[in-house]
Image (cartoon, rainbow, N blue to C red):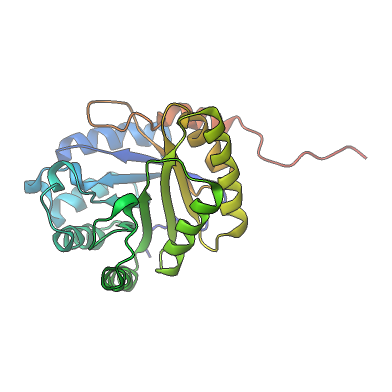
Length: 260
């Protein structure tokens, strides 16, 4: 059995890797293991095409100490001119090489605004891809990078659509451009925990996103997305692994009990 992103008692500290070479990936992995990473995210769209093969993936994954691996292949960087069919094939190769969780974008096979297609043919192809991943003992995260603020009920509807298509985890990225939007995103996080039937990862970008990204997992998100350290390729909104671990290790999660 592959290590899983599901069923954990607390949010996983997932260290995201955005690198062009396997040597850079291995260096970040080694540092992240010592910094306390529970899992890894490998964004293969950043990896140079000549390294996208099973042998490279197996080598890189072998340094992760049997921790679960989340893989993406978004439409930018070295995957900018790759078709969705080719992108899916690359994800399957990485899955077969040892990854656990595959990111299937909500607009896979039909690029659409806010990454959620309504095209019936594309949705059926997504479901077939999801079935193929499940048949390989993989897990599926469906993502929609909206990148604009949405009310709690709108976020929940996107997540329920991910659930209807067969995803194991729903990932939604909106925005926290004001303090009010950040607070509404925390309300949406609580609503997702209460009403969604699958685990979720709800994030935001924008000026006030840091609070959302730190508190979201405490309210129900399945994981933190962290970086081992920031460099030219990393996502700057993602917190540093070591700092997140310090907060998590020193945060009292248990409900308060009155003395009798």
